[in-house]
Image (cartoon, rainbow, N blue to C red):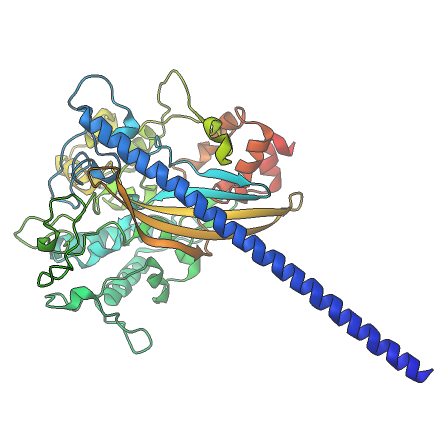
Amino acid sequence: MVMVLIFSILLYALVADLVTTARTARLTGENDVLVARMDNHMEYCLREVEELLLTDLAAAAAAGDEGLGGGGGAGGLGGLAGGGGGIPGGDPGGIPGEEGEGEADPSAQCDGSRDAWYAPTAYTDNEVTTYVWVEDECGKFNLLTLVSPDQEFADESRERFVRLIDVLRAETDFDLTRSDGEMIADNIMDWMRSRSRSEEMPRPPLKTDVDNERSDISLPLHLDELLLLRGIEEDLFYDKVLDGRLIYGLESVLTIYTSMAFDPGDPNDPNNQPGDGDGDGDAANTPPPTPGGAPGEPPTQPDGVGIKININTAPRPVLRCLFSAAEMSDMVLDAILRYRNEEEETEDLAEVGAADDYLGVVDQGEQVERQVFTSLDTLDDIEEFANMPNPDVKDRLRELCGVNSDVFAIHMASLQKRNEENRVFVVRHRRSIMKRIDDGEDGLLHPLILLEQRHGLRVQGVDFPEEEFDDTFAINDTMDMFSQEEKAWNPFLLDFYLPEEERERLYSYGR
């Protein structure tokens, strides 16, 4: 009996181990299959979004050919036309919409909320839904301006950066002071000047180190390098949502990707001289970009729009940091933001997704068409801006800003719902950063970062969050219950992070 008992126990343990191992292997296999499906679907969605960005560029080029202005996308034809030069003080280029007959499509004259890529979109594939949000990198503050060879411009940029940190999380429990901004600015500048490099974090060898008069400068290759610095933790770097309010992180307002030039290649090697994309074959003689320009010399233009901040897409803290409250009051800033949030008077509102059902695009209902700045001359239509007493501030704002973009971050979140009632789900995040290049033909998208995995929270911001609920009610009334549900599950929208009772109040599917 004892032997039988021992044998039974061993047999039970063996069977339990086999069952557990088999279940674990099955679950692991299912998870691997799910991850592979998510990755494949995100790659598919990336191609769809790339088509939207190139279509936007083609529309801008067509508008320019018809004499209706140009410059949507990569600054219009020629890389700089219609959107302003790459950096403050540069040639502002042509002004869209001034010549030609008829009324041009605003979305073809600039980049902003009227473009098809702007609104976060859901693509469904059975039980997997991939949410895509295209973020305009040209609406952010470029960190590279802190080490501009033009010392006066670099000092101004540092002051703007400190102001940006000061206002980034103002009136929240995570407020940062001006002294915090000074410390973070010094740490970033030391990092870019190689003063913080060591054997553990060495300075990477770069092609530009050869015969470079500024060999002490080591520009960051990825914005995530900021997480290596003292005073910058993930809590500050990524967005936060607290009590239904979005609190911006550094990743939402900073960039290093909007001042790009083509590699001139080796002038001594005829086989290593890549073209500059515009077909004129002079890339080998193009000097690297110098944001701000050297003292006493006109600034060197990077390819495309450059570091000018797109006034149509810049978050409130970015626009606020350009000038102090004494130079440009909050009333003027609110008026600028209010203008780009006003509903455009139009006869028909577009229905997004109705023609794309075969692509699995979720119908977003009737979208509110908002006004956009088709050129910086539109600022004069704003009474508060026109009445500003200091004309120098007006001119400087026009130098610092533009209305076009050519670098975009494509955020993707592939999500599978496991339990909708308890909001149990699996989500996988990836991101690509693309530079859009006008090559005079169909346009090009050059990946600066391709499908990297991301973990931090990112949410699309709104200018007037206290009014967002009213807009949500208006949009939801035009959507069926399935579309409302998918919108409420979009991790790039603030609604996703609201308490259940708030979502039930906003969405009829929850009632």
